[in-house]
Every structure is written in structure tokens, then in C-alpha cells.
Length: 578
Image (tube, rainbow, N blue to C red; front, side):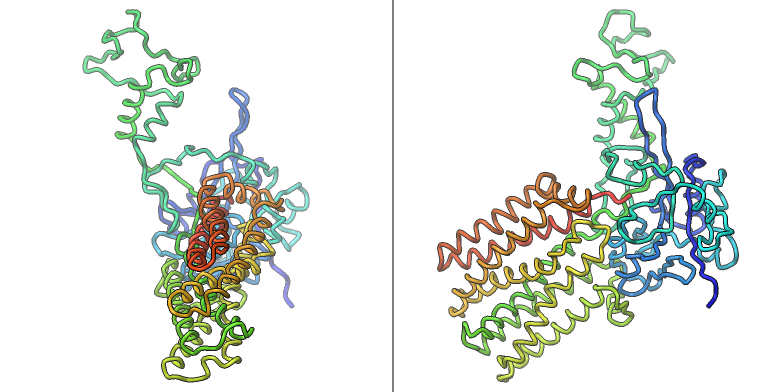
């Protein structure tokens, strides 16, 4: 057995001057497009003027020993090399963005040119020829140290041994190989600093971000108003005669008019309300300046931000309906609550198959490389629950197709207990597997709930109860009463699990913050009105009424379930990882 090699990085924050040479060298080495970065420098400012300081932190892939991105990638586009480098193959990536959810460090992004994921690969092409990564070579202060951490003779190993170093989010268990000397807590822990709406380089127009989370179009008027409300000095509008143009029309403010006064720090003085004294003219001038001079300078956005959009929370909803539409009638027959009827099971299989087909379409639509969707089955990484789920869905889809065909051909096997049992297992697996996919998304703390498999199954019970109630109203009356009972049990179970997942104390601050954004933040209206009132309270009222109220309860429960899925999938993705 040969010697072990374990490449890693150390960033010496005592030396870093925030020059961005590493960012530029990285982009040049890899020919990365504008708007995305494999390596970037984060600025953190502390204190109040004049006692202030600025801290710099170089951010990039941590090349983890236990890398969640390689586990969740369904096609092995990401893999750990024998020397410890986590490398990436663009030609293999399908653009599912699962790696972006798995990475707790926001190190991956979608390349706008290739429409595949990308990240720092330790300049593996340079390492293979005996050279150092480009960022190390270009750093003017030798603040970036790279090398074999397993070799005690290397500089990087000496630094780790001799200095007190910090790593980002070691509690995730990823065993990161990126360390900081004099690491600033505010830099390496995103939640310790506020994220303002406007900050340096934040207003660059046409920001390139991942599909499903595109930044809103650059609002020139809003940016001008923001600039005017600040205390930034704006150059005076020049007169044609070279003099200063004041509101009073004269060349100097000596006529007693109430004009804008310059503050001692170079900004504009404010009135008692805290706004610029001449806000109207300042807004106009700010608009003129931005209109004349606004250009893209440099920007690094949140690469992970809502990388799973409407396709994903719609797919979890349609998948629950598909699983429940077959599961509930089959279980009712197997339990002897209703009589086995080929037509009923055939229609249930048809409805289930239709929603499963919609699920498949949504899954493909979410891919950045949709023409490669079949690679999940043909080039599988069996550690990924995306692969396991794809095979489960394929198996369930084949079963439903055979079931519908058997019904049309009049085969008695459609209602055979073994057939119903096999179909129930496939339906339950289809409902539950996503919980294990979410558990592989280590960047999303709220999704790490141990109750997720039970919750996914409960959601399928709700969806199945709702669809079965509709089938009962549409021509299978024997289904109506039992579906109401199933729906009631599902809704109550859902309410209990939601309470346990959202309102109980959480193990991490990120999970706590995500839950707070659902209950009290931007998602609160969808959660309370949609998920709770429409999805839980009103269905229970409809079930209490009985009769046609069961059907209404089923439809309301489906709507409420969609609202909850929207909150549950989207809210954790708004938590900053970097």
C-alpha cells in the first residue's frame, strides 16, 4: 500500500488583504463566465466609524473527506479522488442541483454556459502535472497554503499543527479540508451577520443565478431611491457656465434659501425624519448618475438560493397523490373494508399513473440538462437516493401500466391480494423515498428531521384519502365513507407531525430560523392560511359535516398540502450558507 495523500487548503487570514487575485486567477484558469465563481472573497466589516475593521475570508469548496455532494450526485459527476480532491466531470452532470442542496458551504453553482454544476476542483489538472492551484500561485501575500495534509513535512501540515485553525461547520460531519488561521466567526458562520438588501456589488443587473431562483430584474428607480436615501455624496450637476447650480438659482448658497447642507463626513445632512433634506433633487440626481454610470463590476450571489423551485415542491405533491391514489383503495380492499372491484382498482391505477407521469415530467423539467435524464438509470450512483427513487418510480410506473392493461383486458389478477400487496409496497416506497433524499441534503438543516419518512407517508395518506373521496363521489360510493375516515386520520397525523417539526426546539440555528420564516416570516401567510386553515382546519370541519363535505374536505386537504410543500421546500433554501 502506497503512502496516503490528502490535499487540503489553509487560508491565513492574518495575511489576506482581500485583493481578489485568487478569484481572478481562478476564473482565468477555468475560463468561468461572468456572474459565477469557484473561489471568492467575502468581506465582513465590524465596528462603528471611526473604529472599524474589515475582515476577508476566501470561500470555496472544502474538499470534504466525507463529502455529501458525492453521495447525493445520481450520476457520479462528483467523486473523491484517491488524493482527497473532490473532482467534477461536466460532461456527466445532468444539472439536478442535488449537490447544491447537499453541500453545507454553498460551494457549487450552475454554470450558465454549460448548464451543469461546477465548483473548485483544486486545479486538479495543475496538481497532476506537479503544479500548485492557480489561487496559491497568484496570492501576493502567500495567504493561501495548499498541499498534502498527510505529509508532516509540508507547509500546510506544519501550519495546521502549529497554529490554531478553524473550519466551517465541522458539526456537519463532512470532515472539511479547508482551514482558516485566525478565522473570524462572523465570516465562517453566515448566521452571525445580517444580510442587507443592498451591499457592495449587490445591484449588478442581469445577475446570473440558478434556474428557479433568478434574481429580480435590476430596478433602476428603486436603486436610485436607495442611493438618495443614503448619506453618500452625489456629484453636483454641472452648469453650462461652469458654476454650481443651487436650488435658489444663484452661484452660492448665500441668499437664505433652505438648501441641502453637507455633513461633516462628506455626506448630506438630514432633516428631523432622518431623510436627506433635499430628497427630491437627490433622487433625480441619483437616477441620472445610475442611468449614466451603472455597470456590472463584480458580484458573487448566493449560488444555492432556491435552487429547487416550483418543480420540486410540485413534484412532491403530485408524487403523494400518485402514491395515495393506489395505496388507499388497495389497503381498504386488503383490510376487507370494501369489496374488491376490478373497475375501481383499474381507475385508481389510471389516476395514480397519470399523477406519476406528471411527477416524471416535473423531475425532468427541473434538470438543467433534461436530455440526460435517463443517465440516472443508466449511469447510477447507488449511494444517491435520487437513483433509488428513480428506480422505485420506474418500477411503480411499470406496475401501474400493467394494472391498467390488466383491467382493460379483464384480468382477475388486478384485484389479487398479492398484486395489491406488491402495488402497496411500491406506492409506499414512492411516497417515502424523498425523505431520504432530503436527509442527504446536509445544507438544509430543517430537512434533517427524523420524522420525515413518517411525514411523507402521512402526506400520501392525506392525498390518497382526498383522491379516493373524489372517486367515491364520481361513481364508487363504497369508497366515500372509508375515505373520510382515512382522510381524518391523515390530517390529524399531519397536524401532529407539523407541530413536532416546526414548533418544537431545533438542534441548529439554521433549522430554527427556517422554521421561524415559515411561521412568522415571508412564508407565514401561505403556511397559516394555506397549510393550516385550508389544509387542516377546514378539512376536519368538512369531515364532521359528512356526505358531500367529505369530498370538499378531500379537495381542501390537497390544496393545503400543496401550500405546506411550498413552505417546507422553499423556506430552508432561503437560509444563507456562505
